[in-house]
Image 1 (tube, helix red, strand yellow):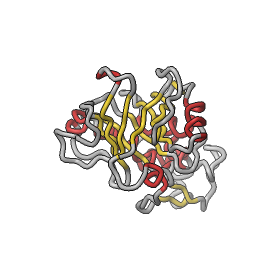
Image 2 (cartoon, rainbow, N blue to C red; image 1 turned 45 degrees about the vertical axis):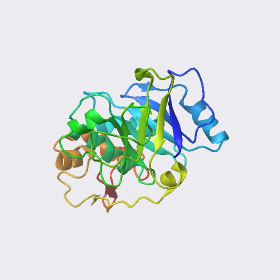
Image 3 (tube, one colour; image 1 turned 120 degrees about the horizontal axis):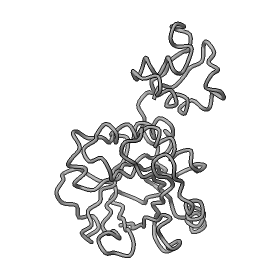
Length: 246
């Protein structure tokens, strides 16, 4: 069973000797972890895989927080992306929105949701798409032993500083290695797309598209961020463009 550690700016420094690393990169919409780049470099130097994560802040747009996590630092092949959901118990919609945006923006990267068992049981339905992964926290000191829920988890956080341990420790519960898991081809469903110019009365702007698909024009950055490869300027949409609608 491979074991890893969760590191952030709260830790004094890099902790060598683990099989994988969960590294904090962002929080909400206004915090970038200053130690992430160094920790990621040190993990790469010893050939260990990394899952970067963003701490979800209740009350802020979940999809924008997912974008903030992705855009915080350049992504590298085999790097996982994780939503750290420790606020807003029971808000299935927010957790699902964060996960959907991770998948839409970075479909080649494994997406995961982190929460504790109590939060998982508080969700009204499963917020994790079947194509994403789950990290469950139950700080019982027993790697792989998760009680109180019948769901399968890919990782188990079994020790935490809040529970008196000097480090947050995690165990991988799947087959093979964490690197295998992160690099495996992820089966994605067909993406929803739209050809600009079908209905010029409303689809000539990102605001109009967002208002049509989401019911709120202010959500246009969701579409822009999912199409940065074809949209250099959010104000320049040309007829015939094929856009992903996340």
